Image: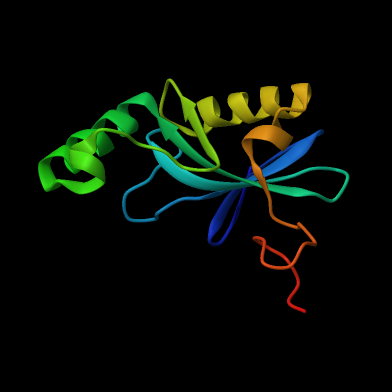
Length: 124
């Protein structure tokens, strides 16, 4: 495990996951909501927003209170991955399975997409 500011990096034989932890609120054991980049050996990079079930519930309750998003009637994110437990270990286990099955390419957003206007695309 590495700490390459601002990322905490977990490197495994089939991927490297870079977690963007908030240094003021997140720890390796307690993080519940984190942006993550998964680098594969083929050179591709995939973005994920990882949430715990508890964090999704908290977000819905907050939005119900504030009246946002139809009073908290839904929660979504394009590249969302929901895990049952907090912490980098649980999140890494989920990423490991996504990479093993190839589902990382369905769940994540490819960051090195060459099409103009896409996340990570080169400007023309």
